[in-house]
Image (cartoon, rainbow, N blue to C red):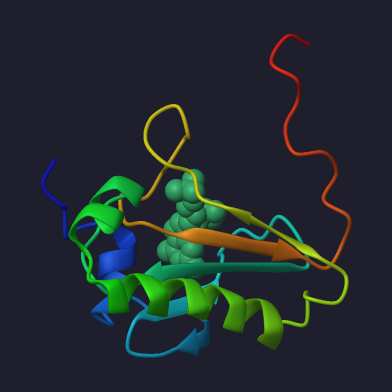
Length: 122
Ligand code: 5GP
């Protein structure tokens, strides 16, 4: 599917709507989630136009991929969740309940986050 550059994160990248930036480099932008689920809840997005993990790993250069994942670690370090631990979530596609069609990783921490997911047979 073609990337839809009207999505909210594309607008944040273009500076059309504000965000609370936590970290930025050549490859990634990280900003606070508008509706935080934990004391630390930061979204990390690649600067390139990639809808999801398939598009990113298929079309991004090795430098973009390395830069993006290093940025995620940088955010964990800057927000000081590396000591207590943290969770990375990338909701991807329909069953993943991905709301914004620009690849993003959630960095969550600052409290115990409980178990990963409810068991599917509960
Ligand atoms: P998804 O469900 O796609 O993984 O997560 C999208 C996330 O983007 C949600 O956690 C939501 O709170 C966040 N979000 C949606 N719109 C905005 C916005 O305009 N600014 C910021 N900072 N976060 C947003």
